Amino acid sequence: MKNRAKPLKRTIFWGVITLAVFFLIFLNQETITQYFMRGGFSAAGVAAAALLFYFLASAFADALGETIGLRAGNKLEGRSRQNG
Image (cartoon, rainbow, N blue to C red; front, side, top):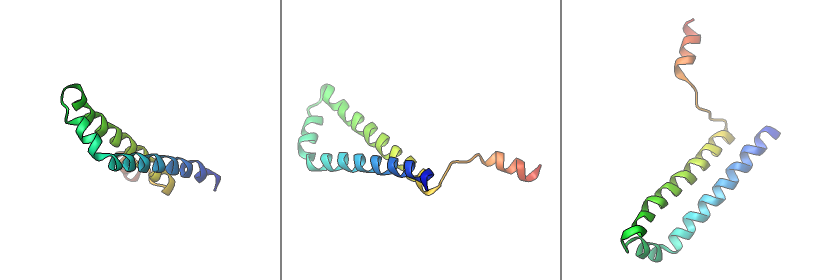
């Protein structure tokens, strides 16, 4: 059970952070939209926000997958063991 405690804590941590950021964005969507629409350098905020969402969602998904026991595997390696 102790082996699952650390991934579970990571999952909860990244889940809470992700939900908090999404909640803050949706709570202040008009202000954020007006800022991004100003043009110039502030328009780069759209790309920065997309990268932030990508990072948060990926970190949460990685932690969740580890918590429930999903791990990426090398299919070629598995085939060579079966055939060889």
